[in-house]
Length: 104
Image 1 (cartoon, helix red, strand yellow):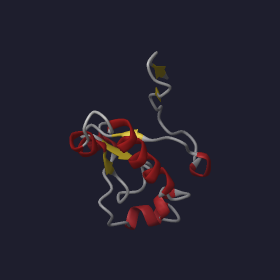
Image 2: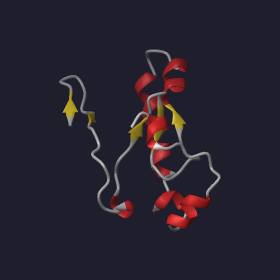
Image 3: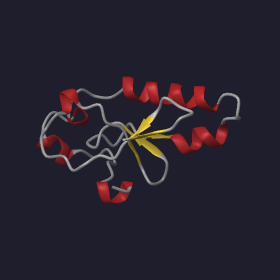
């Protein structure tokens, strides 16, 4: 985990998933193309932080990002991206990108 002296924010690196912990997962992922992914199993909730940052001016940059991240987290499904089980994930046609395509 890394933090800066000018911010209370923290950034960390996620190790490989070794246990199923959806119910207590508090991890967010930022993809290589600037999207926020709140769940590896949900292909419908990615939010483009890059676009928010490009739209925002310097004065409201932090507030805009904060609102977008909060909304994404509040919309996170409880488990498995809302698919119910592993078969539901396999059958999903929601455009979910595998780790190799999100920069993981």
